[in-house]
Image 1 (cartoon, protein in one colour):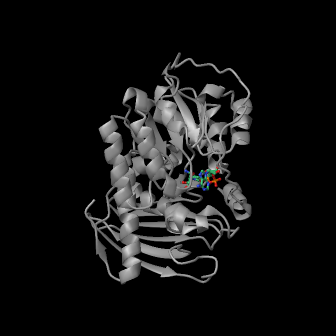
Image 2: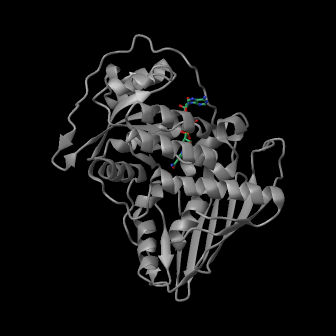
Length: 370
Ligand code: NAD
């Protein structure tokens, strides 16, 4: 994730809400089947840094295809029409995108906008009758997350969340080893997730848009990782916050939080989330008989890993390519992923995030029932 983190340090976020004007017509292959079966036709909402990464990665997909775009910036839509062969009729802005319900050539919308916008956007897309893929964190608190899950259920559409590590081969190998008892009873997980954030004007440092600070953005990898590495949901949380730069990290935007979980089987986890330490990306899982370490553990890769038996040798894959192909299988063919990526899974992380913030505030252990 280094390139992303370097980029974020320089990032400014231009956002101009303007109507779409005079976009060039382009053609696109609208087939929704190929030799591998049905193809998921996806529109991306939010054509920023990560949206572009997903769009580029989708060029190599065999079961998912980028066919549409939603943006407030007409020039970006025009650029994407040319770059990704998107027809004008599949382009929308933030005022017009409810009309996607009348577009039979789009199956799903992938929401890749600032965190606090996900809630309303997911619900609007669900009401338009399209499946939704939403970036992490799915929302900025559990109440909003529950409303999103309920809205998608009511509309009869699927809600998936961009947990790309759930399809990453070395990660899945550690999950397999743990499930098959190769580490013995798992007893401890350590998750360290962080980078040093730069530009003070970016949305990630604005509570209104980010919903919080490092915990929402990068700490969520350790929260979610603790759950799929241990294979249980935590029953209690404790947490502590430190802030060395209150000018940059204003009220409600956390710089560094350490947090601990207890699991029903007796395992514990100890994690750190920060916007003030670069190249911090490590998972360590240990059981009675062995350990697994991933470092880097959640960057764009290659992920590196070893266990007490030696190096992990599973090949590097572009995370977003495999994620989108697998999500196509989940949405169109009812495939079950090894680690869930649905709204309910994301809601658990939001409940944990709420509990961590509460534990920081009260200084007390918070019990959880997930
Ligand atoms: P970004 O700033 O690069 O892009 C955000 C996009 O949203 C921009 O195109 C911006 O114009 C648009 N936008 C729409 N309404 C906006 C508004 N009111 N204010 C500001 N921007 C607005 O951010 P990003 O890094 O692409 O992150 C977007 C989402 O993707 C976040 O939820 C983030 O957590 C997630 N993300 C996930 C991963 C991952 O690996 N899964 C990586 C990076 C980001």
